[in-house]
Amino acid sequence: MKMKLSILLAFASFIALSSLPSCSKDTVTVIKNDTLLIKDNSTLTLFTEKQWIFDTVYFNYTGAGTGNLVYARGGNSNTVNLDNARGVFWKDGTEDDFTYNGVYLPLHWSFVNGDSSEIYSPPYPTYLPNGDYARILKLDATHLTFYDSTNSALDIFIYKP
Picture 1 (cartoon, rainbow, N blue to C red):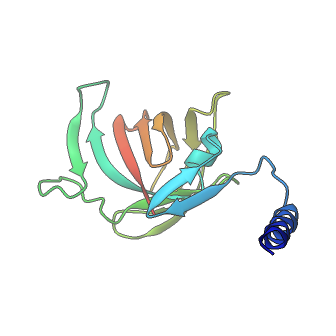
Picture 2 (cartoon, one colour):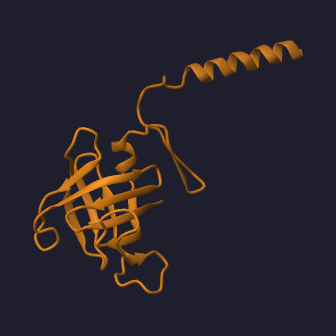
């Protein structure tokens, strides 16, 4: 009896597994306990389709150890309040951006070099009058650091689930 049950369970498992879709190279994203796990580590996948919020910002940044700290999330002596600012970059080159005061801006972006480490945002009236260039210094599933060469700023973002 146990042998028949074991064979039946093995057969049922085989049928169940064989009916699952086959593996592909598509990106697999899983959120478990507020932790983002991504199997595709390409710059485009890590950069896009998630909400980024400011963690820290330095103005007049020219290199390591330089610049003036103007914003730190949770800080009480910020000279700029970016608590409500956030952005989502989409794979089609659009960006949903919300400014520090919650104003929605439909921006655009594109990679401007072969290694996908620099992005350009074209001019947007009153917000980016001359466009903006930024180099990605750090990028993983939960952290994004830009050097904004147009404004000499270091912008450090964190992933917001």
